Length: 294
Image (cartoon, rainbow, N blue to C red; front, side, top):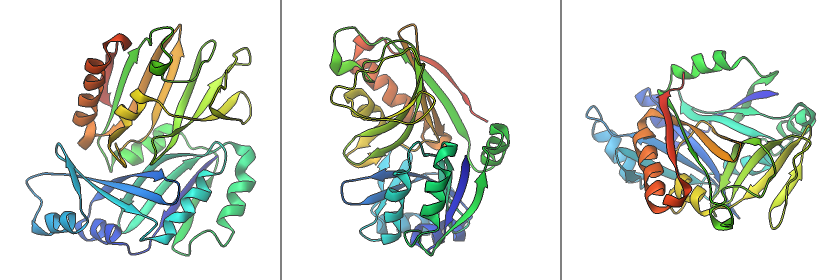
């Protein structure tokens, strides 16, 4: 199933996007006691004094040519809804951004959880500032891509590596026999990363210390933490890179990662890949491809 939710609370970030006619990428993170959003702005020569005053007022952090603003449910209680939303099994946020004075969230989830989604948006937990724009079958990816490409230049960046055997600290995912695929669900502020894994029936999963939840049709939900993934996904404490999807698969022992990255951040992300390659040469990281996604 696919759903699109919008939120319009006249927050400063929404007013800024509306008043300046810009689209702002966003990323949700969930902590132990609060929910947070990270918003990303590219520095360029056309920006005026209002832009820099807004960044300074909101304590923006700069990495390369990208500024990041951090905002959480301590100040905006409406954000608390997203913890409940992400409790729906299998749910993935494909795209998050602010445009025309609204937050937009494009979601996907397994059909069997439509009742859970419907009950949530019909409950008192659904903020008054939110509205549901679409619920139905997943639309053709090319249709969504065409729409989305009007807002963002998005880069597809993929790399592969072969983790050495017998070094569990360098194993990016739990012990799994055979081939598999998966995608990022969301990340939390403590560096734990929730995935959906897609496994064949003949595969076996060794749970160990991992939190594993079977869904359906060979889909498993897992929360996992890993040193290399933290280095790739987190810039610094509480700051993750903007993305419109992180996917992975393993075939014949080779693990391939693919990330859809806003063009404004692609240079920084490529730097991060090469930093990991330098720091962990035993992973044999090879950059596969860089191209526009849509």
